[in-house]
Structure formats: structure tokens, C-alpha cells
Length: 170
Image 1 (tube, rainbow, N blue to C red):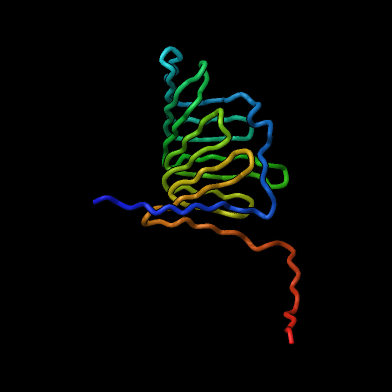
Image 2 (cartoon, rainbow, N blue to C red):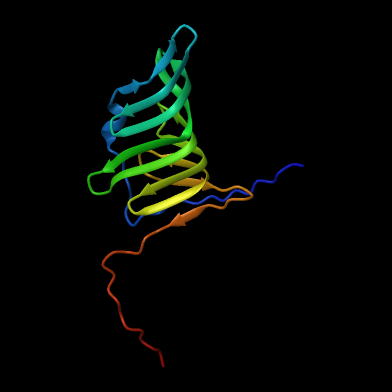
């Protein structure tokens, strides 16, 4: 029987825009792992118990496999229970935290895709779904649910809202 997947697309909107530190993408990529296989001749890369850092971006996973382009990590697929990532988006907004069973990271793009029990916490808001696509530069999130798990969002109340009495019209 073919399962019908219901997808829900939404954008998590914060009270102000979120912008990542521009310097993240001008930084070198640092990789630490328990073990690794780096094969530039075959354009492949694999590692276990890995941590990847690029500027304020920090990703930790049990395993990683990827392709190399010009000898550099290009497309990485990370798996774990869960894979965790964080990124400092600005001095005012602080750090974004995310986790999922699987993360796909293209080092030349400005987004990551979180799959399987995915969630992101940003500036007091949270969003969870089967798949989350997170833009690392502006903070937009596209979320998709599945037939048995809908997207869940929590947006905190506005700060410093003045209460005004209800004025009845005549």
C-alpha cells in the first residue's frame, strides 16, 4: 500500500529578521572526527563521530559521508541520533539550535536540510516537522510534515505589548 504523504509548508516568522554572521561563509571548514577516510582521487569523504565547524556554524554527527570538489568537502550527509547543529545568527538574536536524524549540508550553498524528527529553536520560537529546510543566512525555515506527524510551531508572545481597553462602537 502506498503511503500518501501530506506536506505542510510554512515559514517561521520572527518579530524581526534574523541574519547570520556574514563571516561564517568566509571562514575555513574545520573537521574533527574519531576516524576519517579522505580520498581526493575518488572525490569522496567519510568519517565517524564528527564535528564540523565553519565560523559560528557547528554540526555534530555520528557519521558523515560526502563528496569533494577541488579537494574540499562539498556535499555532506550526516546521520546520528540525533545530528545536532547550532549557529550564532547575531549578537542580538543569539544562537539557533537544531537537530534531526539526518542533515544534508552543501558547503557552497547557504542552507541545510534536516530530515527525520527535525526541530529548530530560534529566538524563543520553535518549529518541528519531518523535514526542515533552514537558510543559514536569513533564518527562513520551510517545514514539511508527514501523513502521521504535522508541523508544530511555537511562537512566543510579543514583548512589551501595552494592553488597551476595548472601545465599543455605537
